[in-house]
Image (cartoon, rainbow, N blue to C red):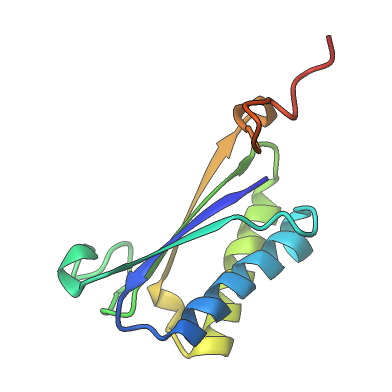
Length: 130
């Protein structure tokens, strides 16, 4: 049920974008128990002046123009340990597959309730039973 938004520089190649999406999906399935085939991702490429981050760094982390912003909206209820494992798997995987620095992998998780989704047809597929 997650929806993933990936915002990155328009200088990244199609292969890098594909690898980032694959890594995120693989981590969702293997670490966060997201069902297979539940892959919904939106990729937005931006000019350098459209990706704004603290040039001096934040909380001891410094960033470059290769920064990738990842926002995952998914069902609430995952433990802190699962979320930490997800962060690690995504940063490590993106670095291994693309060479992007782990420091440039910025992730935000948004927890929502199961009833906050409609997968089409104007229906609430996860509605509570009557």
